[in-house]
Length: 502
Image (cartoon, rainbow, N blue to C red; front, side, top):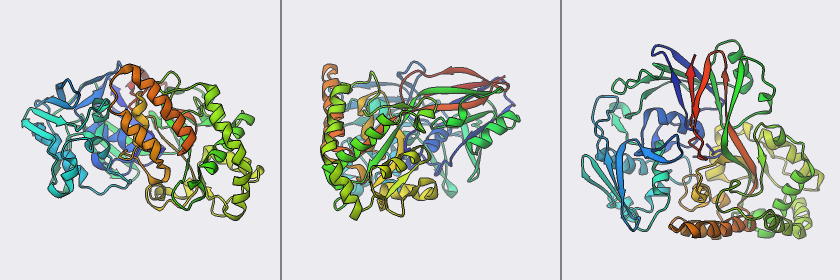
């Protein structure tokens, strides 16, 4: 899942000396390190060291070859044929073939996900024969022409097919005795404990430009600052910046990337809940934005790189509408606010909030919103937060981030689309989902922007979540030990931050 996270950077760490070890830290656990079961940001980042998809996002922001040397696309944009790089080797020395991709995807679809949908579903549901997969355990539209050629035949045109096929969840992998899985990537992941990982180079993909080993551990942002100061840590990656990263002193330095996550208040619209009512959802959206407008200095404003934005699409991205129209839709919820306030007196809102949004809770109470006694910080939930998002749906409001998927406006499909990788019934709104489904098949450039402007208006009208703004990805590092080599400039959840050891 890509919630908060959902939301999540793919990074590659580079070193000049082969025998050196690069020491990295994450603020949270990575969960299951299996391509088909990846459900959080840090798992996505880590898996890309060991597992390789057909294509990747290049430094120039365009799709480039990875497991496939090249590809051809039919005139109707329904058939994609990939020429596999059969010179690539798995970490056991075996050759990569087209069979490995088909087998990995079909095996992955059979695994029970922690999320609502299997993360492979958001692409494979569009492939011919997917509807018979439960019975046959095979998808007819995934065709192995020979060892070096894989063909994917979609039921209808799919504009974002190449972009969606990048990333570790669509990687090739093999399963060895003991359920050990291996990939063709530059590293082999050694899971030392729940709190630490060791990455060693794939003996069949040795690189003199990268460190022989990478140590990764879970560590808080406060501890990371101290460890970098004391030369115990080189790089600290986070899905978001923190207020404590302001005014850093040497040797601490901060690399701030592009927008990597959406900050949002998800509204539980399931039948029988307070936000199954559209007027209540619009009233809550109005109140949240009223609070932001009246409190320019707040926790979010102190986060480096946070940008308040009621719209789900980035500035300059296709699908944006005018601020006047945005505010007009938001302000139409004012007429239902008093009714919502009164309803919470008998039906208090159960809210799960994060550290950044805690200040909003007090503001809601000041406007007369009554909160349930079990309202709490999501840090108390721990790993159970995944169950809340996908299964239990106990709360009425869930403050949670999810990743900025890509530069195309189809990117929000992964959360709001019926077959999205991080889809949840919690925020499902039928009209929004239907619109996003239609949008995936649009190929005429002049139709994309006006179509997704309607999607933006639909999201503001139906309120699956209240969009608060965007957070940028960050990396905290030691300026004594590490220098920035280069960084990717495209807007995608696979922002590439590259470092060299000095």
